[in-house]
Length: 307
Image (cartoon, rainbow, N blue to C red; front, side, top):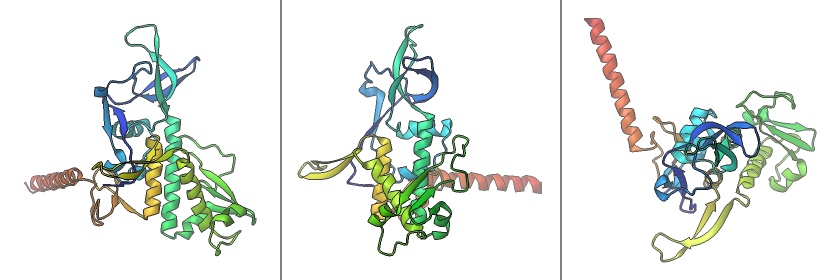
């Protein structure tokens, strides 16, 4: 079990999601939205949905999300495998296929929302990796002090403050005061010079901010129904991935990217051995077959060259 403290189930439509251009409700504005197309005024039937426990089934999902390229194709693939982020604003209408000339209200998520969420997760995970590795050289490039009173942690520190970046690249920057840092930092903290604690507090702010009022602790019955157990229930998939990240920080967990599909998984005796290279047996077998096919192709090419 990936994490016995997290209780989270998430539904996704069996028919999947798709990108389409639809109207913003009560306006002439049209935007591209990721949607299932299921009308808001028609509750989906149970047989239309697939219920999963993504955090239990994918121990490094937050890292897989952080590594996601924010293109329509990659976002769609992620959503169809794991589900929507959970924003699903009901502010859109689309043509009604059952009644031409009329429209139906649907929910959806903008690509800009996905891009923002991916960029923030990627930046905070990167900061945490540098912190874990005591990589002060990298931290010093992105942590910049303004005198002794304020410091900025910036994903693009070499660009002017008002520089406009071409989508999907986003700038993630935060400014911290010495007073705020002093309230969190160890006695060794040195205002005006320290790059470690500004990065740590930036990670703390981001993770805590995504958990505040979005993750609910509750007592529930355990699997055997004999005693109550503490569980943390996120509001949606986006908050669930931040909770998984928080648990990774708490547990000092290590992760690896699958040698076949690229999905990240946790290295832990209860989940995966430290020398494991694949996230599942399916990927292990598929990688083996790829190697064998490649070897056979090379052998065939050598045979033809000899002939």
